[in-house]
Length: 436
Image 1 (tube, rainbow, N blue to C red):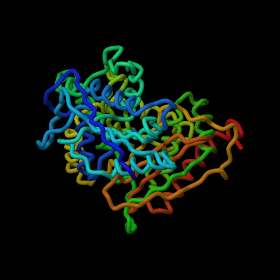
Image 2: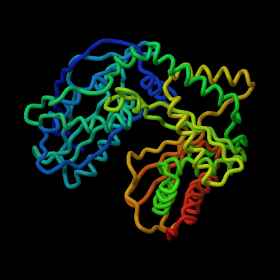
Image 3: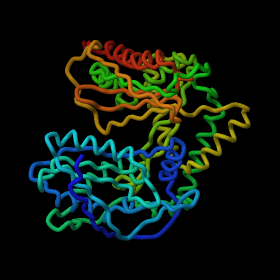
Image 4: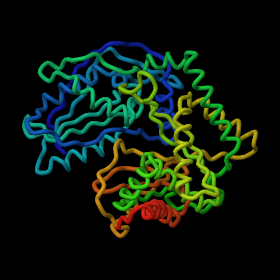
């Protein structure tokens, strides 16, 4: 891999100072401490013909100047505080494209994701361009989850419309709450009322749910955490069919199927799921380039219900989870420990559901179960959740990636669970209309 040059891109913007972490920042920081890894958003994208290296440098300078979250580092305190810099410089690496610029960009991304990150010294942005001469072919851009979440990344992309490419200046004022401003607001009375209401909601369910989602402990695999991905055109078509009939988002249908399958695997009909809530419906949050996502608790009871009723229950559970996902994570962790001690049990609240799609995938007109494929991902002994289901849109279908702790879910159960989700949704859709 040939690094041709490293450009130093200057930036300056409004605001500076030091303050408490926002609740979203605190959750991301704590997650990094627990799993001993950094989460990144972004990736690789091909560039439009005519894009130059200078264009990319202009864009990098613009986003760093405009969005305070990208100019924020952490102090060395424990817990850390956010430190907003008014100005600085950031590296833009330029690589020769070679015979396969796309493959070279993918290699750079892998290296960026694996390289150590010092939150007190490094900016939360890593960017490189693969070029032929001055013509930029591929962009590699990664943003630390401390600074941005999935919807914040979308807000960043949308805000590029406010860049004057000729001058690098902004065409409109920046929108959305900024991290220092938000941290101050979260110490105010209005935010504390929402915080307290969220914790009361969590406590009510923590006192009622089964302590262990999967109570039978199993011998762990040599690599304790295993994952597999089911790619299914049939599931995509079926989920949209059921969702349209029930007048809900297809993600609700998938959560209902997940709850149904986990109930079968565990023998416990009530499932408590941590669902990722964007919080972007709150005033001033929609256009914010920052990390606002937090975990909500969706409790879905499958007992005595057909699948249509489970979908309705999942919709209500998601709605209430979203309304109670705005709190200081530190206080939630203390609450979980206190309730566990008072109940005299070990509470497992580490079952996750994360629909990473931002819009519905393009669905084929017909799709058969035989077109589904299951692939196994890498195993790991790095600490992770009991089970974490990701939903992604892929060309022509959906991809379900399920990562599990093999002391709770065996590899055979993992495979059966993924196919079970597909089968439940496809069966529900076939009642409505044949899908092939």
